[in-house]
Structures are given as structure tokens and as C-alpha cells.
Image (tube, rainbow over all chains, first blue to last red; front, side, top):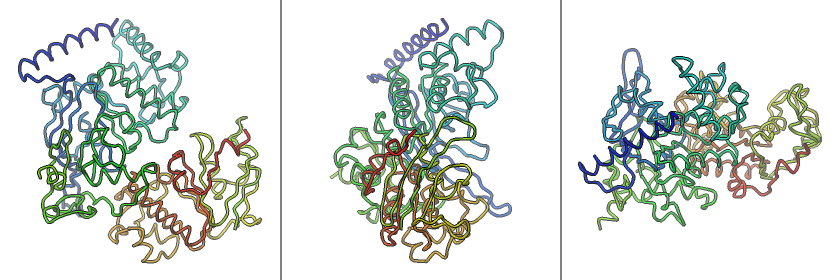
Length: 347
Length: 206
């Protein structure tokens, strides 16, 4: 009952929003933009020696948007700081982190207060592992969360049962503790927990590593299903195969910069549609695409070169690449941060 | 040389379910063998048993190198490389101490592995997984090492770094005529780099 009411509300709300969108901005988009992130930078204040402080930039100038029914993957190596984006969107960055730039959710500015209001409701997180569940609490109880009185508890319980049922978790699972769940079951619990409040945007943080093929397939199907239900999904991962299987757009993360936002169709054949040399290298380094060797490593946070972050590994760099860091420019519907790509198309 | 596991049996504690049963496996010098299995099928357990990380009373069966039991003291000729390098390093040691603890690594090799001089003075938590894994591989490649067991060695790394690490590891194992067992669930990877492929389900008699 609650769900149907929610759905009604949601439909009404979305109708309102859509009509507003059409009248105000006159945009004729099929799906509406949910989350828009522009020029986000995240830095950490560190003490180096004594009282000397150092501002370490981890994410620079990140621009990205997720629309309803769309799956956007952020692909970066582990430890590159891409999870911080999820934390920034949910407003759970640590105290010494400094966040600049603009974020909006359904057109409204996303400040800390608004984030706190939305998280867990409109925006939900699927965490990396069962370790994020309370080990001393039965699964169903912690999924239901806080209840005001008996009636509230009953309603929430019924709703929880409904969602669990949808993901093939029978009543026995309700009374299990997290350690008793198998890997696949645990994933399903995390997914249904995130979907309990019927969120519009789901952030999945590294949902696939350490799972076998069957479990990975199931997780990816769940993500596809979410997009089919018109939710926006932000998939944070280092697994390029997983990203290629489900995402509509893939944002490639390199040394804290998004260097290319490519469409998934571009990752075909020889990768000739990929513009940035790193994206192409990443694609052609896959065992099934040639296992090609590219030398070099990503520069450290805090030791970034003056020019393009990829200039020391690029095979076609020029003087301007060494001096000026390119902006993220739109080229034929994709976005890329490369002087070369720009030149190629402006010629 | 030949590393052999004969009639290996393993189960947890008082559990009745066998994880590994009457399993036989062998690895010769100069051989690059891939081992594929689902998660939870006992790949990592087998890796630990072969490299002497498992106490002898916890499993049944014989591990031999050229027919002899491996010595309990001294440098272990069978080196195991794990999936998560950050968990195998002392967080309170600098990278140079972690690296040189194992053997006197030559300058050329450090350079060949793409390890920057400045990394040596850093703490493990300051380096990325790919950078740490280079150290983990290099410190396992002592001249005394005869066999390398790579348990999901590049699963956590991006594709570009994955190729870099495999390229180096394979080059050196071939140069020194070492044997390598590559444990992974990534069939494409195993198909690309291994001479021979073994499916755990085929050799495990549970």
C-alpha cells in the first residue's frame, strides 16, 4: 500500500517536474537529468611536518551528469579516489576534505542540508560488501531501520518482505545474521536495502570484485533492472568488463581527472572511436583485445605535471600538451580532455 | 625441477564437507600453467598448501620438489603472490625495507619494473595497488625462487597495469626458467598468457 502511494506521489512529482521543465527550459529530452555535477574538486588538508599544512587535490574538475533510466560508469584504478565522488554526493566526506564546485539534483542545488534530506531516500548507496551491515543485527531488522510504533513496524516489515521477495530472498533470510549470508545472498540483501525507499538515483560502489561469473551477472542484471525502472545509476568500478556490459556512458578517471566520457558503443572493434589515448590503451590492454603493453604509470596526487596529466605517456604529445592542461570539451556527443582530439575535429 | 602436490585433501575444522579431495597437481620449471575455478572452490587454499603457507597438520597429502619435502627453514623456493598487496606489507615499514627484506634487489630490476626511486621512501598506504603489486612481485623474484604462484595477482588492477605486470613477470620467469601457476577466474587472461590450462573441478574429486 505504501509503495503504491509512493509510486503515485512519485508519478505526480515527476509529471510536475516534467511539465515545469518543458515550460521553463523547453528541453525536449526523453529522460530528465537527475544529478548534475560540474567542476567538482576534492582536496584533503594534510599536516606534513610539524604545523606545516599541505592541500592534496584528489579529484579535479569533475563534470558529469546522470539522467533517469541511464547507467553511467566511472572507471578508474583502485585507490584513485573515485569512491570519494560517491561520498561527496551523499555528503559523508571526512572533515578534512574540502569540496568545491556545483552539484544539482533535479535542478535544485545540492548542499549539505539537501544531501542529508535526500540520502537513503531519493539517493541510495549500494556498498561494496556485507561488511557495511551491522554484524550483530538480523538482516531484516536493520533493513527496516527505525520504527515509531507497532503499526509503523508492521507496514515497514510488509514492505521489506515485498522487496526481499522480489529479489528472491525468502522468509528464512529475514532472521539471518550477515555472516550467515552467502556471497550472492549478501549482494541481494544490499541491493534490496538500497531499493527499499524507492530511490531515483542509485550509486553502486564497486559491486563486482571478488564475485564469480554467476554472481557478477546477477549484480549486473540488478543494475540493468534499476535503469529499466527509470532510476539513474552511477556505477563506480575498476572492472572495465562489467562497465561495458551494462553502462550507457563510461567516464574514464585518470589521476583525479575525468579524461573522457565515452559512449559504450565506442568500445568496439579496434577502439578507433575512442578519442583519448589512455582510453584506447585501456581498451586494447584487455586480454580479449590484444593484451597490448603501454608503459608508464599515473602521476601521484600532488605531483601532477603542469600540462596534460597523460603527457608523459602519450605517444603524440606536443608543446601545448606539456604546458596547458586541456579542458573537458564536447566533441560529437562525447566529452574528452585532450588537445589532440580537439585538433583532429577542428581541422 | 618439478613441484608436485600428491593426494591433497582439505576440509575446514570439524566440517564434513571436503573442499579439496584426492587432488593431484604438478608444475615443472619453465611451465606457465593456468588454474581456473569458481569462487569458493578452493583455489586459494590450494595455492597456500602448495607454497607451504598451510600447516602440515591441517591438510593431508604430500608436497614435494623433485621428490623431496621442502625444507622448513631458509628461503622458500615456492613464492606466493596475493590479490591484495596492501595486506601483505607491514604498514609501518617503508617500501625500501619491504623490498630489501627479501633479497638484494638489483638496480636494473628496480628500473625494469618501473619502480621510481622516490617510491622507495614512501609508506605502503601512499602507493596505489598497481605500484604495490610491482613491489610484491619483485620481492618474490629472489634468485632462490624456483616457483611462483600468482593467486588472482592482477584482479584489482586496471587493464593497462595488468599487462605491465604480467609482461615483466613472464619475462623474468622465462629468463630464469621458473615455473608459474596462475590462479584466476578470468578465462580470457588465462587463455592469453598460459601454455597449459587446468580446471580445478576436473582435478578435484569432491
